[in-house]
Amino acid sequence: MQIIAIMNKKFVFYTLILTVFINSFNGFSRNAKTPNPPSSTRITNTYNASLSTYISLISDFQNTDQIYAIFRSITLCPGPSISVNVDPGTCGAVVNSILPTTDIVGGSMVLITPLGDGDTFPVGTTSVTYEERDAGNTSTVNTCSFDVTVVDNEAPTPDAATLLDVTAQCEVTSLTAPTATDNCGGAILVTNNATLPITAQGTTVVVWTYEDVNGLTSTQNQNVIITDTTAPTPDTATLSDVTAQCEVISLTAPTATDNCGGTIIVTNNATLPITAQGTTVVVWTYEDVNG
Image 1 (cartoon, rainbow, N blue to C red):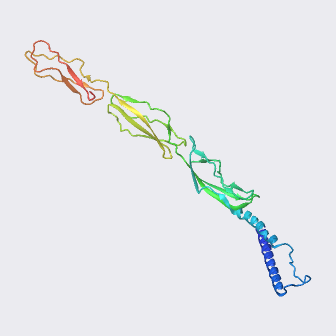
Image 2 (cartoon, one colour):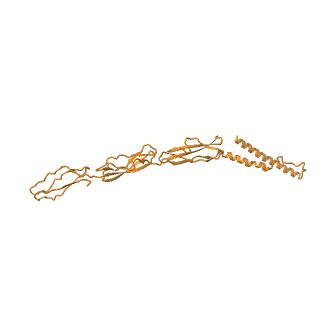
Image 3 (cartoon, helix red, strand yellow):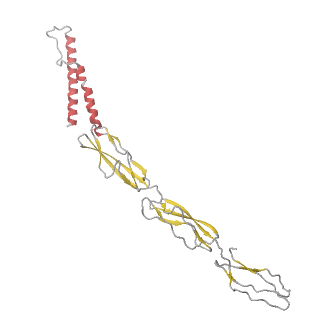
């Protein structure tokens, strides 16, 4: 009905212009044939209003035309895609300022998908569609569609602020995996860079890595400290005396066992041959691989 009204107005406008033009032309023609016709026979304009009165219809028509021209115009449509990070500590994001706008007087943009401006969007991509409606809440068939992508940019958080040191004298053959918590939940893959067993004396730094379901990682260090404080233990509690009448030219090395295994170096303080009469005390020393 609005379109028909506009067309009728156009038709009336152009009809009036044509009529005024024809009458004016006829008036000019008659005046040319009869330079000074008697006032009783002078042709007068059928339309008493001035030409400007009819021409003034143009501005009114333009105003109406402009109103209905924007009937099919969405002035702002976000997108085609919007990307935001998750809100801290959550697995989603409240997304604001994505409401499309229209210039229709009294018109509105109506959400026709589940999520829109001001809602909490989950991690991933969600499609959003708004429909343009006029002042009577009738659809103009125009829509504004775009994607909202929420990115999980938060890596897992270790449950312990600091990991306890792992200590041993000889070696560490296994490590207990620590735990972590992720903002989006799900399984967390826990790995480390250690090569077991760890036997090196001193401190070895093991790096633990926590990876969530979205591939985000965080790391945490743990010290593995190996300190061998136990000396080798002689296999015989008391060594038997070595006796001779004149001299001793060699000695049989005793044995010992070390808690960490490995080769034990056995030495003594004797100067051979031993020829001194009486008792000579020989001191045997056992040294393990860790000194």
